[in-house]
Image (tube, rainbow over all chains, first blue to last red; front, side, top):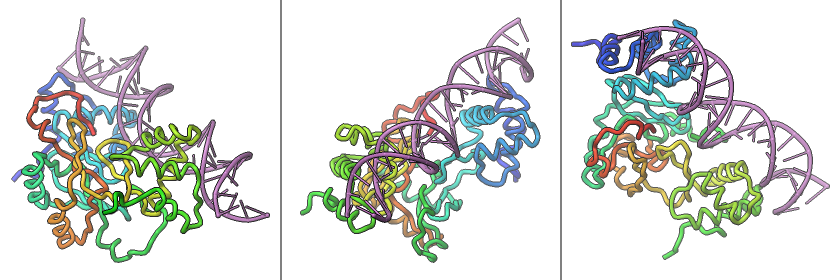
Length: 154
Length: 154
DNA sequence: TTAGATGCAAAGACTTTGCGCACTT
DNA sequence: AAGTGCGCAAAGTCTTTGCATCTAA
C-alpha cells in the first residue's frame, strides 16, 4: 500500500504537465504540505517554508496555494476561524468546529452520506463534504455549559 | 397566527430588561431587521439604516448587532462569502451555498435531523444548523459543468 | 530567449477598538 | 448625575494586486 496519496515528486510532476514552472518556493511548499500533520493556515505554511527558504514571501505562498488548488493538489477549508486552512487533496474528510472552544474535529466523510443523498434528491444540490466545517458545540463544552462572555464569536 | 416572531417593540423591550439603553440607532437597526426579507450583511444593514438616519456609522451597527446577538435577538451566519450575514433569531433554518455561483439557498432545518442525531450519538457534538452554510454545487451549476477559470474561490 | 514566478509594498475587504462627546435613564 | 452609546478615525487581520526584477525551461 502506498504510504501517501501525494508525494513531493507527484506534486512536482503534476506541475510539469502544465505551462507552470517548478521553483524552489513551490518545491518547499510541497514539502511542507506533504510532511504536515493536519490543517495549516497560510501563515503556518509560510513560517514553515521560511525556515528553509527565508526569502519566500507570504504573497508567493498565497499564489502557490492558488495554483496548487487549480491543479487539484490541495484543497482549502473554512473551519470557523477567519483564516482558511489547507491540506492535500487526497485527505478529504468532514470537519466539526466547536463555536465555544474553537477546536476542530475531523470526522469520516461517511457521516455525510445520508444528508448528501437527501440534498441531491431534494434540491439537486451536490454536497462538498470538506469545504466548510459544521458548526456546533463539542461534548466538553456542552458539559461545562456556563455562560462565558466574549469567549465565542466566530 | 402571529405574523412575525419578533416585532420592533419586542426587541426594544428585550433591551429594556437590561442595563443597556434604547437609542435611535438601535431602534432603526431593529426596524431594518424586522422588515428585511432575507440575510443581510452589515454593509446592507448599515445602508438601510443610513437611509433613515444618515449619521449612524458602520462601527455602531457592528456594536449593535453584537449586543443584539448577546440578547438572542439576532443570529449571524457564514454563507460562503467573506462578510457574515444577520437575521432575526426566530428564523432559524439551514443554508446551502453554491461554490460556483455563490448563491445561497435556505432549506428547512429538518433535513439536518438525522445528521444531528448521528453527530450527537457518535461524537457528542451538538450541531448548530444555521451558523454555517453547507458548501457544494447547486443544480444549475452541475448542469452547466464546464470549467471556468477564476469563477470560484470561496 | 521568454513567459512564468517572485519580493516588496500597497491596496482592499471586513471587523474591531480608542477616545471624547452626546444621549438615555 | 451617571453610565451607556455614538461618530470618527485608526488599527488589525486576512488576502489580493501592481510592478520591476529574476528565473526556469
